[in-house]
Amino acid sequence: MAKTMPYKPEEEIYCNDGREQRLIKFVHNHPKYSDMRGSPEAVLAAIDEFGCKEDFLMNVGQEKGKVVTNIIAQTKPKSFLEIGGYVGFSAILFGNEFRKSGGQKYLSLELNPAFASVARELIALAGLDQTVEIIEGPCRDSLRKLQQQGAGQFDVIFIDHAKVLYLNELKLCEELGFVKPGTTVMADDMVRQGNPGYSAYVRDTPSSKKQKHESEMRSRAEEDVSLGNPDLVYETSMFDGLDPCGTQDGVEVSWCIGESELEILN
Ligand SMILES: C[S@@+](CC[C@H](N)C(=O)[O-])C[C@H]1O[C@@H](n2cnc3c(N)ncnc32)[C@H](O)[C@@H]1O
Image (tube, rainbow, N blue to C red):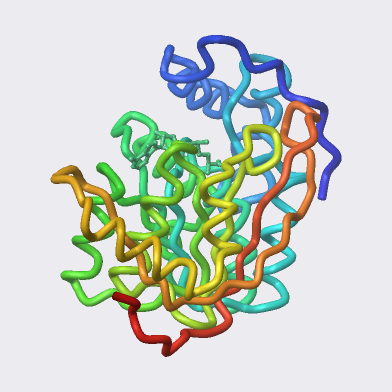
């Protein structure tokens, strides 16, 4: 892995101000553009160069990304679901390792059509478009559509969109049958920003989750709140790593290790 300089600092406005289109121009005009065709490493290096010299980009980064690529190399997943794709940095970094390890389909869900279009272009340039598919739209709609189309358990789920939504999206994935024993769920930005509700849930026991599940069922509001599958048991660890600006952060990795058969309490 090439050592990258820290990205420019994150400012109040940190995306969607034209920088993603400037990234595409930067890549097109880069003196090494022709070397990038079919080279995930060269495309990632150009994205990092833009982040260091031009503008901050909210990518997972090479250093923290190693937490995920190491797990891909060890566990050799066949299916991968990413929630929050942005301009495709993580999809290229992880998709490359996933393909090398025998992975077949890497799905990346992205809300913003402009970001999705940049991601598709960079993924195609890196030669990963047969492996990585960007699915555009609100992730909850995409997740439900995937299930209607027959998707089942995923080997890895990487959650990296809006922090406040992590837990609701994990619970929806559980309800849809995407998380089963054997699934590894990874959540980004769990130290710098943190996400106490999410961390508490993946550490909770089925009996305690079931009690909460029951009371949530009773007070369930009309809005799109998922209740999850309280039977799922996780083993969870925090893996530290630096974000692309060089700030300490971490990825929370939760291995779904079983499904309890406790009766729901009344
Ligand atoms: C931190 S960025 C993802 C970075 C990317 N994983 C990487 O490391 O290269 C978060 C992305 O999540 C997307 N996002 C936010 N809410 C979403 C939603 N409800 N559905 C799908 N994508 C969403 C944002 O548009 C943004 O591009």
